[in-house]
Length: 95
Image (cartoon, rainbow, N blue to C red; front, side):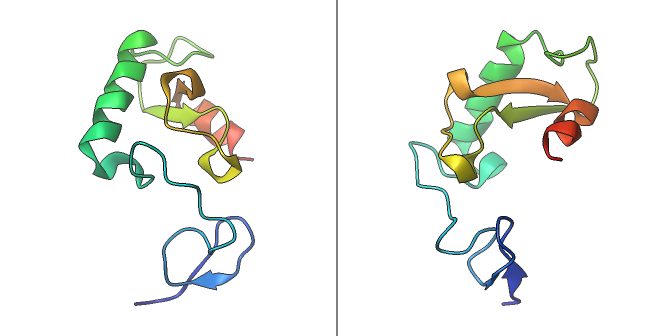
């Protein structure tokens, strides 16, 4: 398995996106995002709640479900911590 840098600190790791110090705590749904049925169902609930539109603009294209408090910072996979953003606005939150 190839080593990859931690998304938070750059430390090389074999475990995935984060080193042991920065790995998000497990919540009721697996933290691998779209790979679980529970995440897909939760994502669909968020999209429906937000009318399948970005909450910052009227866009209905290239929608992402965004964690208001990132998982790396302790945010959970809960409706109250998720919003729908278009790709442009989602990318702006990552800067």
